[in-house]
Image (cartoon, rainbow, N blue to C red; front, side):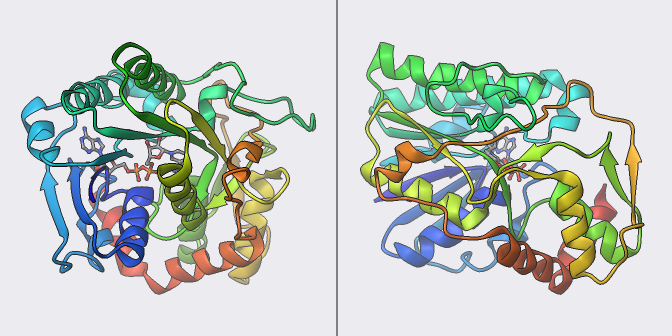
Length: 323
Ligand SMILES: NC(=O)c1ccc[n+]([C@@H]2O[C@H](COP(=O)([O-])OP(=O)(O)OC[C@H]3O[C@@H](n4cnc5c(N)ncnc54)[C@H](O)[C@@H]3O)[C@@H](O)[C@H]2O)c1
């Protein structure tokens, strides 16, 4: 099988490439990545010498790049996107271009050969749940995105569904909760907090910090995608989420400070993000019926992630210097 992985040099994409290469070494993997600030070839060092691996630096919005990358491909797994909510607040055009137009260019190329298309999306398309409510998002939840990032992801989901309905493209979609793990660019909460704490800088926490997230270790996400590729029903969406009940941002920050032996004064409240989603929580029972469930508990795998950032300080310091 030949897979095209868009955004394979980013956080989840590179973890997926490593996971797949190890488990399915006979498969050919082509990566198409623009190498924006979030894409990093160092994330792919472990696989770059594999004979079945090739990398194309290119843009999903560019038809020629996409045509070249999709030659002979059996399955597209589409990770490439602009992904940081804060950046989307002042770069709406870029988010619309990459996440919506880029997905459209890929879909247009995919319909030529009815190539199987798996779209990586987010639970943020559903908007926000009330705090302390016990409610969860599932595949039937109405989309209600609240910021330019989640709006652009919602639009891309609609496009993917349309290409299935109108053009019979064999698609699946996964809407996953917040991921953590190695190789995540140090702007999202967990790597930002770890790198600040290691540097002895105060960790910035939005508002009162009582924002609840559903955390999933990145390898569990990779396994979920594998199950959907193998057993998912064409045309369907699958929600993917973590083991733990609601965990708020302050709790995450305290866990990180505790592990690094820093006291709890090493953080500061900063002005809140506008329209900040209060709570995400995912019901993954549909995917459980296909045989998947999250395996990694937050306590163990957060520690593992912190250790990775401690051991790979050069990796993230280089990125911070480039900023
Ligand atoms: N990180 C999370 O917690 C999370 C959760 C659920 C879903 N998702 C989704 O998973 C996917 C990957 O997220 P991530 O956190 O790994 O992102 P990331 O920001 O770490 O990586 C994005 C990658 O896409 C590439 N890219 C950006 N624009 C491109 C373009 N125009 N052409 C080609 N490549 C381009 C970047 O260079 C980078 O390698 C995204 O679609 C995101 O919406 C992320």
